[in-house]
Image (cartoon, rainbow, N blue to C red; front, side, top):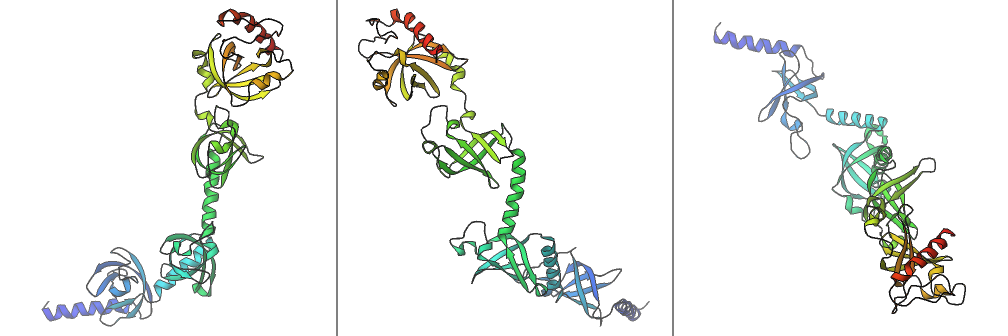
Length: 387
């Protein structure tokens, strides 16, 4: 076949291809190559069409499709080949997707462009939408400009006029994420679990700890330290990040009890290596009761100095005047019951190192404490047994 015949055959084949398509027809094709001014799109069989490259770029001039991507377009010409145009299709596709997201309650991604009256202008794909100020966050927004330029996930709460009116809510999306997070977190909140939380509020009797997803637990002051704590304020502050152990979960009441000291070794577990009967220790009086004074010997280790072991004063509670909460004094260990976590103590008088006796009619023993320990120990054991 001669060259003119070859050119005629090629033109005829192209003409035949074009006849299978009509102007105004909607087609779907795959981008196969890019030229300087046009891109080439395969639209089925051996048919290939062209489209202006400017129609494949976004508002910033960057290509929004790549080779191998599938696009929808309309045939605008069949003369000398098939020419396509996407004008009207990109917006139609975007509107359709947004309507589907609205109906299905699916989150869409948008960029906060600027602050406007009552809220924000948000860009979703190529569409403009509005997010009220009250819907931009869960917490109150002090500085509206803080959200400008940020990209968030939104829920479409209004879709009207074919997508011309779009109202968004980031708050609903955050609340949904929080509920989902809370449901997952609840599965992990079981007795014995160790979690990290943030102190949300502090009262004298304890602190409420935010565990995530809006779930809070109570860390009682008695579970903050093995030592006696006068107030929760002395241990934690609002905003502190702490690690706690879940002690109890009351699902019916919706209450979670937390512990801090339970993450540390119980000092009583090794007390047998540090205490013995006859030992003299310095301790701090923590509180008084009708039957005696409680004394902290070490953090988390308290003993009881029974009222009967204090020097005679002539009045029923005169002994209490010799010690007061916060007082540091010297005490003798006269009994030890590690299984029950009990230590019996007796006050050692200053100067003479005389141990107070339980019987006010028995004269005190001067000198070393050793000779009085047996008698005093027996009396204290009897006194403690009668409590």
